[in-house]
Image (tube, rainbow, N blue to C red; front, side, top):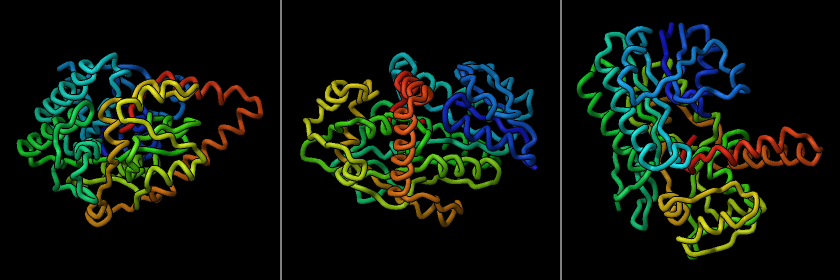
Amino acid sequence: MVGVVLITGVSRFLGGRLAAQLAADPAVERVIGIDSTPPRTADLPHLGRTEFVRADIRNPLIAKVVTQARVTTVVHAALMASPRAMGGRLPMQEMNVIGTMQLLAACQKSETVQRVVLKSTTAVYGCGPSDPAVFTEEMHPVDGGQVGYAKDAVEVEGFVRGFARRRPDIDVSVLRLTNLIGPTVDTALTRYLRMPVVPSVVGFDPRLQFLHEVDAVETLRLATVSARPGVFNVAGYGVMPLSQITRRAGKLRVPVPGPLIGLAGSLVRNSGVAEVTAEEARYLAYGRAVDTSALRQQFGYTPRYSTAAALDSFLAGQRRLTGLLRAGLGVGSELLQARRERGIAIHGA
């Protein structure tokens, strides 16, 4: 029997999907979802018996929720990847860094917490011209100098390592997810690939690696319901160069200077790409690939979708959506409008 599970970021894609699966599992005693904004009305039926608590994890009062509910497992899925979604870089940094500090402080004081799961990102490795062919969990970035979301994730992982040293009796799992893709998840990367004309950095053909939304949720679920401590890269098998990705997607790829990628994206009508940060432009120049041996051999999970299969699943979803639009159904246009308003960054959801 799994005890009481608390999930941060439950109003977002991964947190909400995880909560829905756990709420449907009779072996899970109770599911509590926390976020500073309530879930969308359309998502409420899927959350089942999940108890939503509207709270800001930056507030020390989060400790009362952990204590009073006698939480046994904490899943921290609330790291924000987009400054736009938080109203600027400073609020985003406060939510990611200060929020994590307060959450871990609550866990450290708790007498009931037995497991902590962190949804992190492969962006912690950075990306640059001196990168290895693949990053393993023991490696550190070659170039360093991470900014934005990647910098926050590095700090958050540092706090989690310190917490694990102070509370060795608690199992800690750190899941470094690569870029999500699939038929329903919405990120700046999926919006980028939906553009009719795809700008790329002139002179570069980055190797990209994808993680299907189904595999991302399943990895989080497994770490939640069973003890799988450690740090794990989570990605689909294989990599694909951007040139191959755009050809398979039937897109016209237009090379532009790196600093102009954001401007080029904004000039493409209905692209939904509001901005491309310097961090994301660097990723679209150099790419990134990670080794997933530990995920398969130690964690005990092999993703169902390879990078190529995840891309195909995304493209199939786009074809279905296009069919709805051509059939004159309003649901398609409403979904597209909602996606444009959400402002989610490339690295996560």
